[in-house]
Amino acid sequence: MRIDTHTHFGEPSRPKELLYRTELPEVYKTVAVPDGITGTVVTESSEDIEDNQWTLDQANKDPFIVGLIGHLDPFSEAFDRDLDRFAADPRFCGFRLHTNCCHQYTGNPHQGVDTISERLLESLAKLVEKDLALDVHGGCEHFDYFAEFYRRTDGLRIVVNHMGECGPLTTGPLRAEWVAGIRRIASLPNVYCKVSALVQMAVNVPAPADPAFYRPVIDVVWNAFGTERLIYASNWPQIERVSDFATAHRIVADYFAGKGADAEENFYWKNAKRMYKWGRDS
Image 1: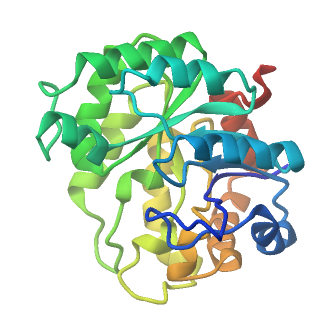
Image 2: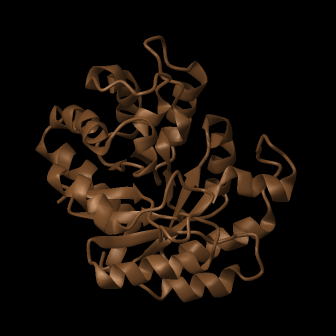
């Protein structure tokens, strides 16, 4: 089993601003299934609350979609109602929090422990009550902010998207602040990390295809999170700005093939199942 936990789908006749392009699951499957992908957890594609329902409707048609990390506004008075509505579907796994969403409520482009909204904390507590997960999208400069609301919300499960924006990647040393930030955030036991969007972090376009180019950055997250908290994810179709699905998949497949069968199984689906609990059967 191989579950891609970060795909973006949408109706091509109604393109959304947040996406490079909108596509239907059928298009994704033409590139992913040949590489052994057996299902996907879709990640929110727009700020339209009804797009959550659109994705769940697609899942009704095609069981290849096993789950959804949706879009909800945790600062909104409608949050509790919206959460109740979508959490009633066992494929709804949680929602994604963007740091730019927080900025508009705090007025602070550099999030810190003193800018956390009480409304946000209340919403996160509701998320925990529903046994759902929180994806976070932001760079290492936001890790302390993420860590603080993790500490202030008992039982919160967090997934760091795109390795905390590890780029720009070159043949030179990795950013020291990113390496230190990954180690700090990984010290929190209920925080996981998606190994996703690697090719988008490279400076050169098209992105390098040699897996060895990306090995140093994957080494950092491997050493920090270990075999039980890294999750496979592609960020398709966004990765096609700079590369293609087969190349991006080969980069991580090459790395994890060297870690043994148990590590591969954890990476490709077991860790994600433990975090997202799609189907609510575990």
